Length: 178
Figure 1 (cartoon, rainbow, N blue to C red):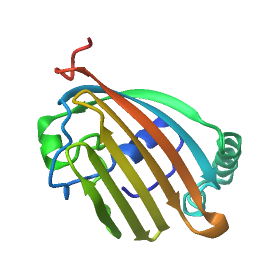
Figure 2 (cartoon, one colour):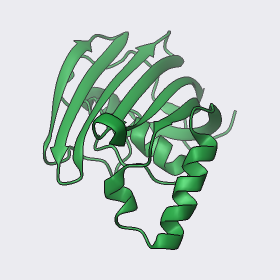
Figure 3 (cartoon, rainbow, N blue to C red):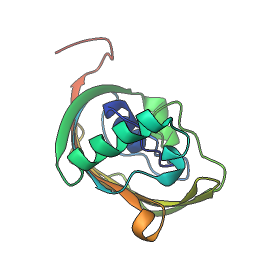
Figure 4 (cartoon, helix red, strand yellow):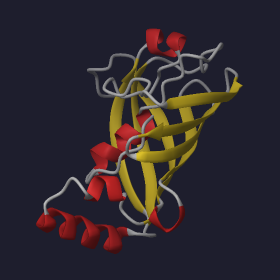
């Protein structure tokens, strides 16, 4: 759940889906299969200095310009993801496979019921501190809603991402379209 700001919706999806919930005692009571998830998100603050420092001056200027254009504006996107019974049992549903527990991060699981998962993650890494609060709610076996608030950095250098999402079950077979 290490928060990194990258251009594109793939990064937003990774940010949301990187929530590894292996500490959860009870899986969400939702159906495995193909899920369609709609996201609404907005950027806050400034691009993370640790990210900007790694860029060429041209790329940095481009990122700062795009961030300023998008800051505070709500964007939306929809994607599809496969949720398996094993992921539900392990507490890793909706997680991006590339996002395992990051070194320097600690999680606090606040709620772990069949209807609601909530977790807070604090990270102290070489790129600075970050915090993420995530909630996923099962609204029946074929619908989820949730939110995420993530902040990286401190003070005037802090950047953030606020997101809400809704997911609906599409098909039992992850390769199928219904």
